[in-house]
Length: 271
Image (cartoon, rainbow, N blue to C red):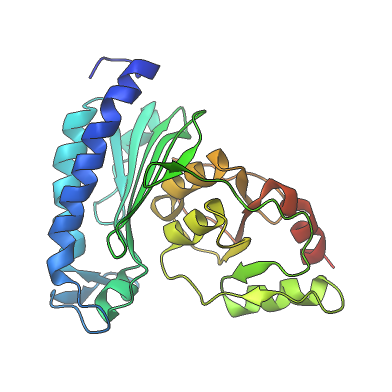
């Protein structure tokens, strides 16, 4: 790769990145049992969240392959010790080797592999691969978003009535109370992978995705770009856009929605 990521350099990178993502899925897939417990070894990280040998294997693979694709890029991943040197880098890989580990280990289909490349603190490339169903969500800044190569857009809905919503129940309850009488929301079963939750807003199958506090950069950055490029937004409940590659990569409660629904949701939230 050249030292600077020109448009041509990004275009040249994408076929290689697709191949890497599929190889990563091939590493994880043998450990997954649809509807049943994973065959992978499981242990608990500090704080009690689970990790499997599949998470670790995919992370190690991606660290080698992505670092080879863009040697100048720093690294931030869920399963790698954080190196503060990333804060001084323009280019940073943000990686979740298995987003939705609890879904993966329990046989739920909604888990994904999420990779973003930041440039100047903003996602330049976003790639979310859902091995179950074989769905690839891709975006390059300024070039739109695709699902399996086909362009995607958020739903054109402008009003909350009848919106399809998903997320933690306390957040959905608050939105419902603030939306007035009979908002007639269609509640979609919670999507365990945050990256897929955002991606499904991007492809128009969900209108509003709610995200509880404590999400990390690696949960969000890849799908954030997919959603932006599809006509949506990820923001906090003050309307501020998400920021990445900060010293502490933790976020508060967030909203994912089409741009046209952002203000109606924020207004209902504040009631």
